[in-house]
Length: 368
Image (cartoon, rainbow, N blue to C red; front, side):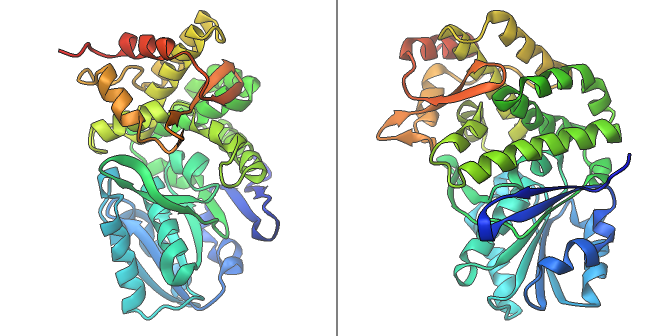
């Protein structure tokens, strides 16, 4: 494939930053990392799964030129907590890093979210770079500046908006990603077609077998299109006061699943895939999507190997309780991201509660 890496820009004025997409980016820190460092101190944050694979390579490329340290966190959504972020603060303080230090997130979405949150908080804000190593983090969480941690009562309820200096997407890291995690990342790729680009959704239907084989041309195109759509939405609505909320298609249902299962049984992309099918079902009940469109959406997730029904233990009442803690609740009214058609999402609190109840009843077991 020619013209690699691909380069996009998240246009936020003086806080704009590039996204680089291609293989081998980790091997060229002088080109992709050095230009975005303010001071001499770098703290790389990774986890116990990614660190053995890529940390030494990254550190070796930095140590000759910068004072570089690392902190390795436990791996898993269940560790996306204030306690884990405090380990980053401990490392920064122990090494006497100041406001010109840079944090570097090397890992998936959990590492990126916690590193960004630590960067937002440490000495009231320091720079950070995103080096996402999972498909889900490459196409979603690394772009846009949302950072934070979970709380036992709700996902991502504690956090801050803090944009990275750059996002470095080395697609070679996907070669070591477990297939289950790769499939979960495809859920977010499909999301972009559903919310904004019907032609992209059709292309994904046509090319899904190639994507599942990680064929480079198709993979780079899918990542670039996903990042382009997200970059445009973030540039238009950085702090989610309007349009950016459509990026949460399926997330209200999905976050309820993640919370109910303790953030440890379902991967984020698995829960969001199911949530998007539920959102599509509700959209059809409201008279927007056609039933065959709902079936197409479900079929694509199923072909990827993602769940399209919640855990059998979840009830309608359980969903409603957990959804009431969602960040999109405004003045006590839950707003949902729904589909007018494939490629056009809306955020609405003016839906028929009876239709929501029917969707939940269709997907959940009755309360004993």
